[in-house]
Length: 528
Image (cartoon, rainbow, N blue to C red; front, side, top):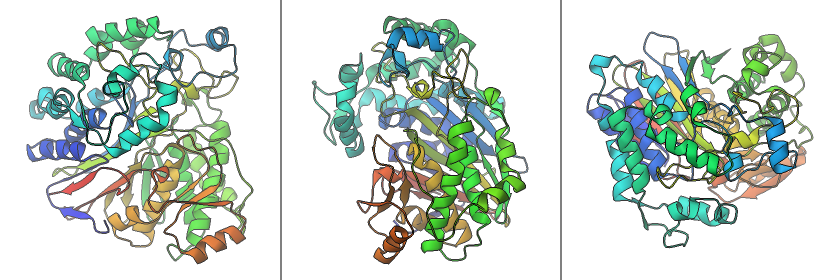
């Protein structure tokens, strides 16, 4: 796929076709981009369960015509019982387990985020919640055709998930790994979504689902209780922002790594690179990534416990000093210790000029794996990323864990509004920088910018190497130049899931909508 989808009424892009169609149908019914995104978010939680679910977190950046962008942080907080002492007594180690009940220690925030986003739509114009969740309910109860992506992921991760309560009964078929194309039915999840449609999204935190989840979590060793669910509320936040030569860029606040994504583009803007796809482009972005990640890794965490506000990291003087440390010809010695992550990104726009950038995640594939049989909901393991030692990411009651998630929006100098993002944990800022610079700085078609070969510095998706990974479609001369500059290069297949599943949407000032999706996923880009 090398050409963007074009339209004038609106657009929707998601990494699974069913989610794109659900969002498109809401737009066609007169719904807003926000409502379309809720429909798509519910649907993709059903049809792409290895990547996300309603037991995870979500983040929004929303740009409405004539208004400054706003953010919604639906980052679940740690349970009141989640303390370093609690985990030390349970695990007798210096880390939090990645699977099972002890890994499920933060409230699932994403549904509260849907609720907060819908509150921005005038009540007298809002479509019924039952309509927004209709497709998701239908897919859950009627069954989905398992994608090869889900089948492969289940096979790769089954050793760590098979014995986690509830997982095998929900995501295996007759005890076996589902094959691509097999029908997977999720009746209990469908019933839960139907309950939400009838009783409101807040019932997830105060109604029957909350009571069922609290009892199941406690029975399986989690510190989460009903009181943690009842106390949770997503927050409207002011996104981080950075002015570059291309326009005003926006991304999500801490504890997400949105600041790292902005830092990379701010640093690259200072390098004066004029040509795409050559050594200066790739080497420059890779070295900018290293500078941004060094600070992110040591200082980013719950914003209430950071020494310096993330917005201050984007001051011109600080970026100037960091850019001066970049050698245009030589690679900085690496590695460092990164984080894993599994996520989906989606974008939407409507005829009113609203543009949405949205991301939803359960952290690792299938999160903690712990799946409630009564509700069909599995719980994220985002809290496994907490530290038990002192610092901005130390576990504690009500604290927010570090998040790789960071939905992005840019308001360009010529009036275009660009919504873009990706899954891929550690690779998210790197893929964002590739797509943005290719499209905005170097004029590549939006779809071509996503399809073009990508790279990944460091670990992600459980990979143990910290090398610079390049898809094999890069020019061999460029690969050699990067090796000669000191990069530890490893070649990937021509299209690799390791480099993420990206998407982008651009609303032009004349109403034209461009959408693009990633051929590495199972998505669709729909402009109409």
